[in-house]
Image 1 (cartoon, rainbow, N blue to C red):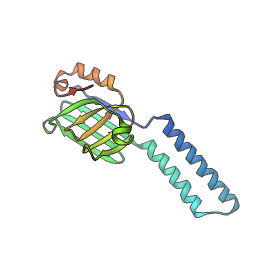
Image 2: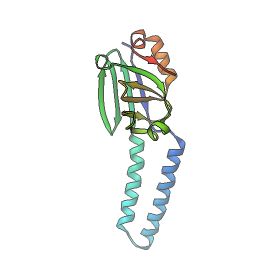
Image 3: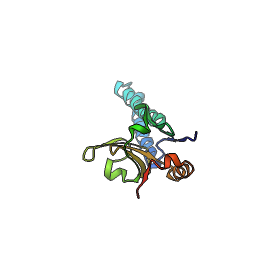
Length: 160
């Protein structure tokens, strides 16, 4: 059985740069408070900054496509979910604009189109049943997988 697996993390340099700048500022501010007088708010601020960075480090979108269906998770937000092929009415490989259509990356919702999106970067994804979008960071690798797996390829409509 052929399986396509894609593990995604947030790899945008600008996101990490923003987080590091914020964390550095909070660290500097926190150490200033500690040198003058210990502050509960400084400790809380440092802990919050550390937890936010840790959250982005462990955040992972996992997509598995096989003859059984599609399994995805967005750890630690969304636990593993499985959609068997008989529960999938439509599936399209599409290009989309994550900022314009969803306000960015991550776990998103577009109320005007009633679509939930899970993405960590890029602009290509699988639109499943017209209401679930799972981003793919490696569309070329996915296209190669489809070309080698006719059974799965026949289930997916490719739109550009």
